[in-house]
Length: 187
Image (cartoon, rainbow, N blue to C red; front, side, top):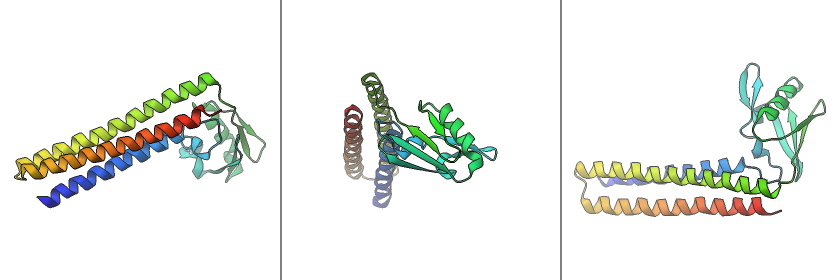
């Protein structure tokens, strides 16, 4: 029984870690007025008839804090990249010089910053919900182990450990929020 309990605890930690990483990657897509190649991670480009992530058809660099430079691996795909960026919900205006695409990132208005902070709060809440769902699922599994004969004390200790993990990972998500909010509100 002890082995199964340890497996549940390891799984809880792994899933909570994944929830934090996923939340962080979602936050990276929310732009903070500074150019970052990760802001284009969600862009899918039509490439030989199938949607392909932008980073698989071009290199994305930041020559300066307010500019993204996209250099396609094949010139034939440049129009598709430009179209994918225009069609995205990122509200960016790509300029195509025939070989590269430049995107100037405009400075954020106060109103836009506040909208982005709200968006960040929604992503943070989703992250916390996933962590709590992991806790609920793992505790359910532990209860099943108790029905199968695990001692009540062992299960209680395991549940306390799961709660510690939950608190710890929720704190990590809160930390992500603090950083992102500071980044967004810095002019």
